[in-house]
Structures are given as structure tokens and as C-alpha cells.
Amino acid sequence: MLIAETKTPPAGWNSFDCYMGSINEEQALANLELFLKKLKPAGYEYFCLDAAWYADGDQACNERLRRVGQFRNMHLDPYGRFVPSPVNFPHGLRALADRCHENGVKFGVHIMRGMPRRALERNTPIKGTNFRARDIYDPDNFCSWCGYWVATDASHPGTFAYYRSVVEYLTEELTVDFIKLDDVVEHPDHVALFGKALDSVPRPVLLSLSPGAEDIWRGSWREYVPCGNMIRVTPDAWDDDRTNLLKLRRWYEFEDLSGPSLWADLDMLPLGALQVTIPPELALPQGSARQSRLTPIGKKVMMTIFAMSCSPLIFGGDLPQTPEEDIALATHPEVLRCNRNGVVGRRVSLMRHIDVRKAPCKSDSAHGWLGIFSVNADARRVKLSAAQLGFATIPPLYDIWGEYPVSIGPDGMLELYLQPFDCAFLKY
View 1 (tube, rainbow, N blue to C red):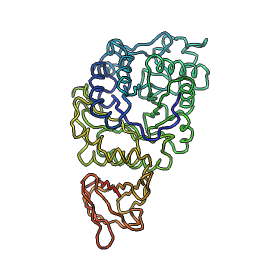
View 2 (cartoon, rainbow, N blue to C red):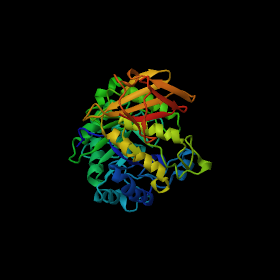
View 3 (tube, helix red, strand yellow):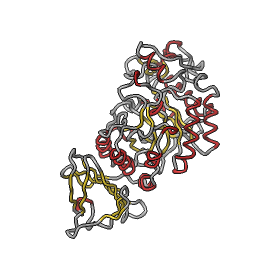
View 4 (cartoon, one colour):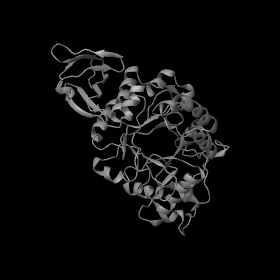
């Protein structure tokens, strides 16, 4: 059953930024134990495995094979559905899901639009039908960046039957509560089929829609609302301060659409230890094993954006290797209070390279939060009027990151000094 809406943006942990498509049972359990200690007490709820939980071996193995045009060994059931790797998960994923549920945590996995290439090669039957994999194959709408999945024809009845069988397996056998469906945003017909498949099973599931690129268009938003709970509006956003400008832009583009029926997702929080299984000699375009390259200012700006945009909060770092200061950012009480207020902040002015956003408190509009973002490459002093901040008269303000009351000048103006691409996060 597709969850109808989430009153606050979902929050959780996902393995992609730290393990890409290679996490194993030992690593997952180590992260889960720290998730329970460090993130769950702050209200983080979902623990999710990203791509390739059905593939043997680690990311270094994957990169060596990929560079010679090969794939790792991947496991299917007789109906062409991926099943957990017995090498990487010797106890299966159900044991991990049970551990989550025992501790009040919801469990999730990543899958893709279409079906496994190996199902096509084996021409596996589609459960409950007379169709086989080759009957539903679509050679034209393939994913450009993942060769071990192939496209299916949304107009063929076998595609819905296949999606329904996948959802039945994931919810009944693996007891998942969260599905990240990738390479799908530019295919709303597949989104609708998958949402319908979720509605055919009794288990409540949160559906996260992901594009793999920046392909979502505002005009299509209403097509996704009945079928998902959160939808990526950015491409993969890694640990580079420059991605904050992209997030600001995409937040503005969807500020009037995002909400409890469908949250605009600005991608994960690339904090802590990232790409931990990739050695330097096999570095990807994003890099190799490292701590987050976001600067202290970049981290502060990112968390302000996520708080005020009400983007889902999905932590991306390997928790055993993540410094406490990054955990503290992701669990900052005022960040969480603003994010879970559930009112998406809106732009109130954009002048002289200063972008001002405002999010009123849902229960008391006289209070709320301001984000004042410099989109300029130079450090500068700025003065802002009440009108530029969205007020008739500037109310008392408190600097959340600086932890001090903000003074208003005798001229009734707010004066700030901002570093390049810095921000102020204020409470009023």
C-alpha cells in the first residue's frame, strides 16, 4: 500500500554515498548499530540499502570488472527478480530488516525502472501470467548509465504484472517499508504502474522517485503526486560546495509544489566518510575514499537549505568513520525543528546577490526562520530592509549557527557580513 502522504519530510540513512553499490552484511549491521545510537534518537526513521544488494563483491571488484565491460555476479529468482547476494548477505536481507524492525526502524532498498538484463537473457517467466521477460522488453528506453538493468514496455500488461511481483517479493519476503525507484522520473507511465503495484499489497511503503539526472519538469508534478512520497529534483549532488547553488535554484523552482503529498528531494547529505571502499587507483569521477570535502561554510549552507526547503534528510556517510561534528550538523535541533515544521520556505527577495528565503512556523506565523544566502564569490557586508526580509518591521532575530541574538541598526536595517557563498540562518 502506497503511503498517502507524510506530514514531515522523511529522514534516514542510505548506503550509496559511502558504499555505492557494494555494501555487505557486516558493513550494514555496523552502520545500523550507530544509526540506532546517533540518528534514530533525533527522529531519523529509514535505513536503506542502495544499488546492487543482489551483487557479489565490493566496489573495487565492481570497478575492475566495469572497466573491461563486465558485471559482477548477480542473483535472480525463477521469476526474474533480483534477490540478495548470498556472498555479501549470508543471512539474507530479511534478517537485516528484522533487526531494523525490532528497534523501531523502517527498512528500505533501491531498485530500478525495468528489469534485470539477466532476466531478459534467461527469458524468465513473469509470475502469475503467461508472459516472459522478452515479451515486455523495450529496446529503446534503456537507462544510459546502468547496463545491468533493461527497460520494459509500460504499455504491455506484463510490465505491470512484473512490477506487482517485484513489490510482492520486496514487501512480503524482505518486509521493506521504503523503496527508492531509480531512473524513473522521466518516465511517468512507469511511476504510475509502480504506484499501482504498491497499492495492490497490504504493507505500507514509502516510495522515493529518483531520476539519475535533472529531468523533472514542473508541468509533470501532478502526475507524480498520486504515486510517490518524495522525488529527486537534482542530479547526484556530491560533496562540493558548488552544489549548494544548484540546490538553491531547484528549491526555488519547486517551492510552491513541494509538501506532504510529495516532497522535493535535494539528494542526500554527503557528510562524513564517503566512497569508503574505493581506493585511489580506482577513483571515480566523484573521487575515492575520503571524508566529505564540503567546507565548514558549505556544510552550514547545505544544512540551512535542507532545513528551510523541507527536503528529506537522508544521511550519506559511513557512520563508523564519520566525525561527531558531521553527526551534530545532521541532528542540530533547530535544523530538525525547521525541517519538520513542514512549511517549505519561499523566496521573499533576490537583490545584489543576496537570496532571502522565509519559512513561517506552521502553528504561529509570527515566528519562523529566515535563510539569507550570498550567491556572490566575494566576502561582503550587506544591509537588508524589513521589506527585503518579508516583514513590515524586523522582529527580534536569533542567529542559529552563531548562537546569539542579532542586533538591528538604528535605521531599522539588518546588517550582516557574509563570506563568499555563505549564509545566515535566523529564527524570528
